[in-house]
Image 1 (cartoon, rainbow, N blue to C red):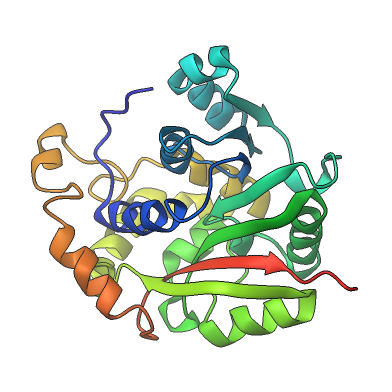
Image 2: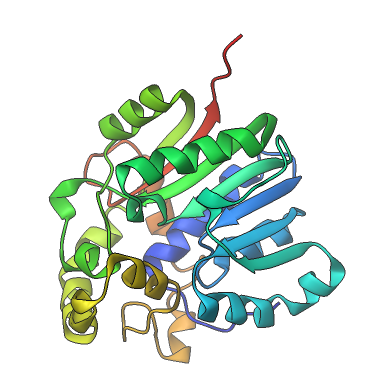
Amino acid sequence: MTQSTVLPPGTILQLMHVRERLTRIKPGVFVEVGPGTGEITALLLELGWRGTAYDLSTETVESLQIRFSDAIRAGTLMVAEADFCTLVLEPQSVDLVISSMVIEHLDDATEAQYFEKARACLTAGGVAIHLVPAHMRYWGIEDDIAGHFRRYSYASTQALADRLGWQIEHMSGLTFPLSNLLLPLSNRQVKQHEADKLALTYLDRTKDTGHRNVPYKTTFPPYYRYVMNRYTLFPFYVLQSVFARTSRAMVLYVELKPIHSS
């Protein structure tokens, strides 16, 4: 279950916050929607969780099955190609539904369906966690290429929770100011290497987000691990914590629990 890939700095900062929050929750059974390269999957397994990761992409699923072959053999993880929103899951069977950079790919009706599915499968006291791109002022070429429908703000996330019957337990802006500083470089690399994806359907763009290959955006030379890791980036982790409520953050982390009618 080792992973030698050098992660983008924003991803590292996000994972540091996810780790901090997950240590506050007793490990149990999880469902992960859209696991991508499996960084959150690896963190969940490390912290003692067991569960299932669902993705729409055959290529992503096959890659994860190789990466997590030991956990799959041990019975602590299953990876499946499936659409979470249309699955038939056992009611109240999981303690955590988690996704990162997923629900912004859903149209309004499917977004509501996602949360209804999460509500149905969560145990009493279970929690949903999602990370999403933040604030429409940062809408750019990457959103178009990835097939996003929206970016989220604190206000729109609260309105979504109110409309669908969820209670926000924790909400925090992430990656400020590092992602903001790197945004011009990021947009340039995406435009140079992925502009052809604009010709794809929204579904195909979504599937491709799990295995992107953009130099100095999603992939880096191996020696970068010495300058981009959770230890060297710790000062930026402190800064993202200090500015957790800024409207300039480019990523939102949200924990919610469903409100059940009496």
